[in-house]
Length: 412
Image (cartoon, rainbow, N blue to C red):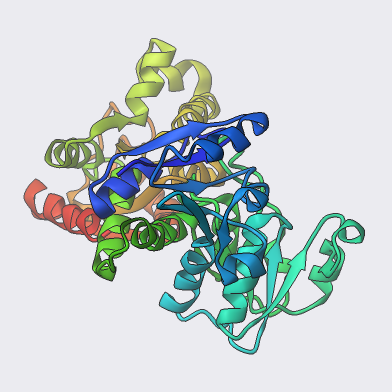
């Protein structure tokens, strides 16, 4: 089959991998300028295509047939060439509905805030309605978009679920957030359709407030699952979508080890990288390489503040990378910004070792003695717990810790 994706800028698309995993077909990326769109569709040189920004609405008058749901939404993201007739569908709606239903989010009978006014927001409205919820679109310019409210009103009302359909927080501008989730009364769950990074700043903000948060990769896989059924004309096993999501998450997500000095982070990270066939990165080694000096030498000349500044710069450089195994320094958790940068694309695993097994030494400027280690643990123990997505013990050799981490990776 000749399948692919059309859009104006497709450099970071994961769609080819997803469709190969789901149906084993090659999948092309066709970047089109607006003036080229009509001619591309007129040629009909494809069996099926997906449509992304900015063409989900502009393709409508160029199609022969539009599915009822897509017509209600007013946007198409899937086109099937049915013997020369171009038929348009919207599987974005089904992908988002899948997230809402699969995770049992409290949508039925509740007000659901939908950020944005583009094609994805229209799909979100349909998904919420299918789940018996009450969608409310939110715009920065409500006067220009009928039936929407402004952000000031968003903070005055109560919403059970918030769905972000804007590109705010998308790679590479990953620090941006569209709203302050802590100011929204009654909020219990956040869904962000942005898939890159895996955890957006909005999701991290919500989780910090104790609010459940779900990212766009699941929606991306689920909508592709429904699109592939349209392309092939064949029902697919839902297990394929779950397997694809797990596999893609495993491939993309970094594994980040945090923990006390001498807890074995570097040793275990190297073992995991070898076992999983991933690249290994040690933030302390990167700091030394950039400075051209050892860490004790950096401490001697620049103090801890100088080292922390260098460490933060190194971690800033890693935040958009994927598929790594990263060993961090023991004090990385002292900076909330460090941990946010590591969490965007990383699973944070705390490597826990009994304090009596930790070894002090002259090569550790802040852990030269047993009393130093005890002090560091009292200062940092709660931070390790705060930032960890999972904890693995390292008290009985590399094999035990390696097995524990591999179970986490494989169950991603």
